[in-house]
Length: 592
Image (cartoon, rainbow, N blue to C red; front, side, top):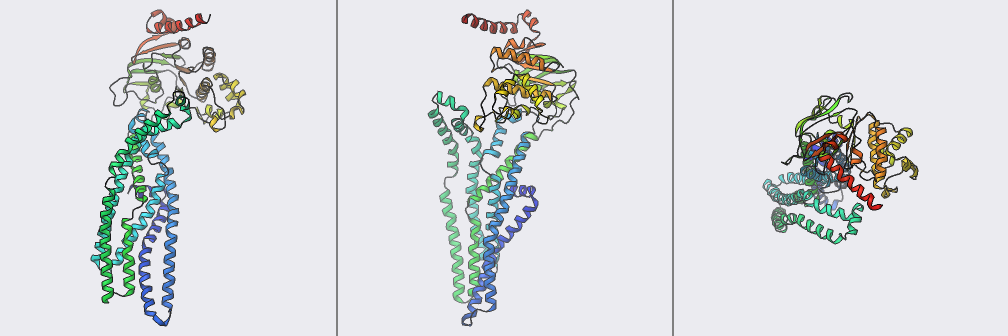
């Protein structure tokens, strides 16, 4: 069983302790049956003579067995709780390691990986592994006790023991199939319920509150959530039809065989073929077989836990099946990054995002990338950082193919600020130094970065300075979009100061006004002098100062050159520049 193997690997010592407790717990019911029978026989033999020493000892033994029955189960459950929590932590670590395993982000962004992650982390909710291990204790003791009871019955009539085992075994199979049907429904639940949960979370998340209320979306979201949820559970309801019928059938079989057992025992007792002691022992032992068909949520917990672990193994295989490159990156980026015939498309898609891209980025220069939406600019940025791998062609860093460089090395040489960077609900200091958390964060260094990113005035205005939490939800403050963008830029500059050699900025001033953008650009020029800078922007007033500009169109390199050269060529860049300039000019004339 997958669950048992994982428990052993998680904590072998406590697993052996739990196994010993399970063995004791399984033997105790049969011991109770035998002791009860012997005591009953002893009491009958004593008669009017009173309690003999043997009877007293047997009574004490019976009391001890009964006491152990009350103690062993809870102790075993406590050990199982501890093991289960350890297994939960192990599952969390393995999940994070699996998600860190792929050589690029494409394999993490697909629906298959999302479904596997949901199956591990969000399918059943709560502590799945812990509940499964605790359930294993309850079911293990019940099943073991039933088997031991059958062994006691073998001393009476072997065929009766076999018949009881068959009846209870049949009921156990029926119950297992019922839970398997429920499990199969649960397996599909994460994928089927994902959209329903998305709609529910949208309704309940503060981030969406403005749109929900502005557009009056509450009823619409509730209706859509109800429809998605109903669709998702239709399969579960279908799979569980007929449960009452099969349960009744298995109960009738068990009742008939158990009744036959008591009839045989009673007949032999009346005929004198069976003493009171033996009758008591065998009767109690026969009822112990009920543990084989015990219906309990533990069965579902064990099944869900086992399926979760299998899903985790599939996730690990799917994200780590390709060998990770282990080659060293150049000690320092000195010459150039070269794109040779680079093409990229997403797995399962025939559409090329980039195709036949050839360009060179000399070290220590600035490159601006422009193009209409969908031209492939952000994809190019992810390829440059090593987050994506080319579908065709190659990218060379100082002559070394990026595919041969360890995925732990090159991305850290790139200080990147993407459009969808994370706004951590942490302090301002943490939001900045997370760009290179291992780099010592002295006050002087932080102030220098803040000055370069235009954050210095904000630091002075915050109630606790660098220690201010940037989230009202956690007792801090909220920032404007432009202020957040400066924080993100400071994070990228922090990584640059810690040793990164390429600064990549994807729309770094999208949330700033024209004056703030101009001021920020001037600061960037001073802070990145001599560094390699790749700037993606829709604002041509920013890109015009780059050493070189490339224009992407339809996933291909349409034009490249300086601002002056591209304007003189009067091509795509010049047309886009004039359209944007005319918009600002028209706005100025209207104001006047």
